[in-house]
Length: 535
Image 1 (cartoon, rainbow, N blue to C red):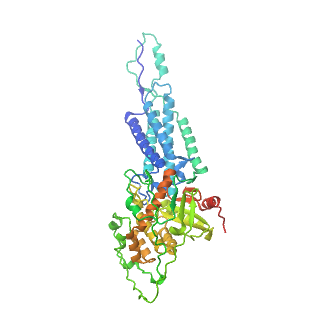
Image 2: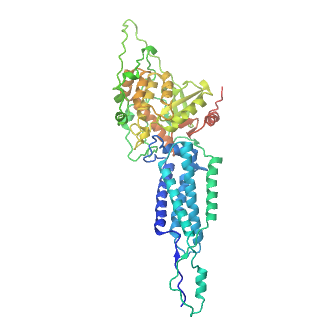
Image 3: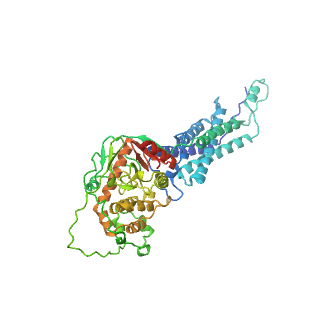
C-alpha cells in the first residue's frame, strides 16, 4: 500500500481569502459607480463640494483620466481581476496555480501603488479630495497588505514533504514502513520577482502616461441644434408657470426636453436705469441685520423678494413732479441679432447680459453658474484672454443655476450650489436695471474663485448699485425667472444634442466649448473659430 500524499498548506488562510474577496467586491462597486457618474455626468452622491471634499473638482482635472480613459475604468478592471483570481487561488492542483497566485500578488501591488499615487495627487496637487476615490485607494492598500503578509508568512514556514518526495516514497517496496502522519506540504508560492516587475511596468505606464501625455480638460465640438432657437426676443413670463419639473431628472443631466418654445415677445426692462449715480440708495453692512447660519441655509424660493424684503432700504426722497414738463416719448430699444451654431441659434445682444460692448465685432456666449467651481476658476482665464482683444470682443453671460429651485432638470440639489438661483436672479436684475453696472457686479460675484458670496451679502451689494424698490419689484414680476428658465432650456437642448455637457460652456461660432482651458488655449480657440486677432 502506497503512502498517503500529505495535503497542501494553503497560501492564504480562509479568513484572509474571504477578506480579499469582500474588499475586491466593495472596490468594484465603488469604481463602477464612479464610472457611471463619469459617463453619465451625474453628481456624486454625498460629495457636496464643501471644504476639501469636492468630487467635481477632482474629476475635472487631467489626473482623472489616462490617455482619455477615466482612471475609474482601470480601477474597475483591476479589482474585478483580483476578485476572479481569488476564486481560483485556493485550488492547488491547477497547472497554472503558480501564475494565478503571481498575477493576484501583482494586481494587489498595482492597486496599492495606484492608490498611493492618486492619494498624493489629490492632497498635494489638486488640494481637493474625493471620498469615494480615497475609499477605493485605502481598499487597495489593505488588500496588498493582506496579500504580502500571507506570502511572507507562507515563505517563512519550514520545508516539508514535496510532490517529488511523495513520488519517491510511492516507488519504495511494500515492505517499507508506511508513514502514517505526514505534515502538510508547502503550497506552490507566487513569484515575487515577476509580481514586482509586472506591477512596476503597469504603474510606470500609468504615472508616465499622466505626466507625459496629460489629458485635455476641455472639448470642442461642432453643433447644429435640431430646431431653430430664436432668443432675440424677451422671454414670456408665463413660460415659467407652464414648465413642470421632471420626475426623473438628475443633477447635471438632461432627461427630457419639452417641445414648447419658451421665447415669445414680452417687452424688456433692459433700459431701465436710475437717472443719476448719486440717486442710488446705498446701505452699509452695519445697517443690515446679518442672517444666521440656519437662516442662510434654509430652503427658500428662487427669487430675491424673500431675502430682499428683510433688508431695510432707505427711502429716497421723490423729486417734485414738474407738471409743466411734457412727457418725452421713450426711444426704441436698440437691437442687434447675432447667429451661432450654423444659424440654429439667434440672440439679441441688447436683450442679454453682456461683458463688453453689445456692438463688439466678435461675440462669445458663456453658459455658467455662479456656484460652479469650474466656472469660478475659469473666470480669471476668460478675463485674461478677453483683455487681449479689448472692444473687439463681447461675452454674453447666460446663467444656468445648478439648483432645483429654478432649474427643473435638477432633481436633487447639491449643497455646494445652494443659493445659485438667487445669485443668478440678482445678476440679471442688476443688468436689467443698470446694464453698465453688470460687469462690476458680475466681477464681485466671482472675485474669489474658492468662496461663493453669501446671498444676503450679494443683496446688499446689489442695493448699492441699483434702487432697492425697483429690484424687489423686478423680482416679483417674474421677468427674471423667465430669463433664467430660457437660459436653462438652451443648455438642456445643447445637452440633448451633445451628451455629458458640463459647465461652463462657451458657444464660439458654430462650435461649443466645454471644460477647462488655459488663457492661451482659449485665445487660440477664439482666434481660430471667430477670426479675431489681437489689437
